[in-house]
Length: 76
Image (cartoon, rainbow, N blue to C red; front, side, top):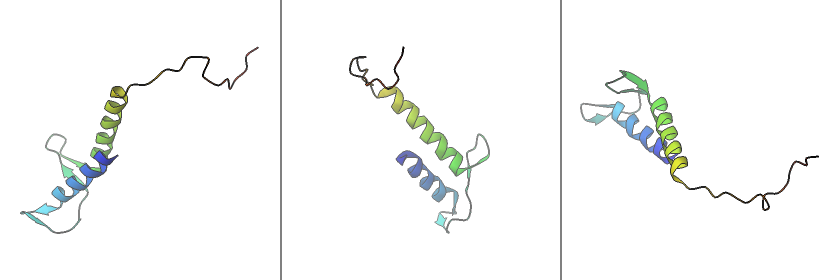
């Protein structure tokens, strides 16, 4: 989440800087060069999604044995 917030603030400042001077927040479009202009929120959402996918793939998960898992559904 911090990556999305940081990238959003960074891109908002860059998109609203003209001739090296920040004049306040007037636009929410960021010129990507590849896809022309995109909303900053869409780019930040994509960054958040990429970070969560990579984080989910990297963090090891521990499997619990069936004896330790509480029985929530009884079978006949």
